[in-house]
Image (cartoon, rainbow, N blue to C red; front, side):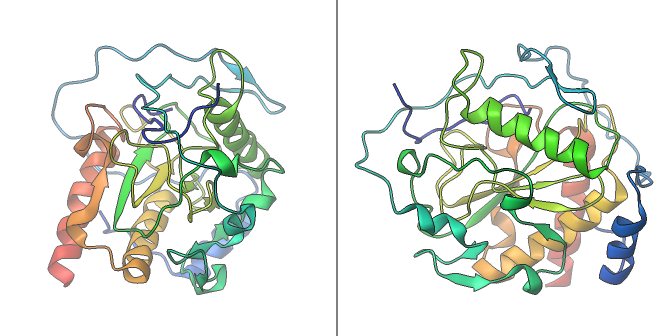
Length: 282
């Protein structure tokens, strides 16, 4: 897990050079059969390697393998005393406006979006969450552990492990209302719906308001993002920007908002390049 994601403001309970058509992408996903897709071959940025990491969560063993060793955030963020939360049915919309009304569907999105119901039956604690009240920025993260598979079952296990770590009741869990991020992109390029977008996330302390959180599975200090991940990221963000009127200058990586290594040097380098490209295309 990225080492600084946290629920600031959440009530606490007592590169774009790669091109692939949508049709070809969906064919790759359908035919991958669990095999990892080829990784993009970009050069690591020069710079200081990370020499220390946050304390790790005990490894969680799932049905496929031992996969998750998530590092704990430094702080959980200030608690709030807000009154009872909004109605739970506001979380049903994939791409809502500020009032929770749908403004786009999965069919409108140029990337494959997997709805939350396809990977978990657990519901967020809606009364612990705050409404987003509009979206004006995007922040990109990585999970921070090495990952090579793009198979469906291991990916859903990883998502469930993240959700449990963020919202579980164990002493090593965060105790938040739900998984911190709004969307997660796996190594096959599938975009998974995570926290309902009508609600504020818990991924960047002091910067969660109006901030849409996207997390890529992998540790991009030591491995390269998969080509399919980068294609989906570079296609999904412009779609979101158009949908919500997000300015290019409001597309961030986590380290640009907080003192953290997230999203890793390789993904940071890609984001630096692709934002320049987007700026030239205006």
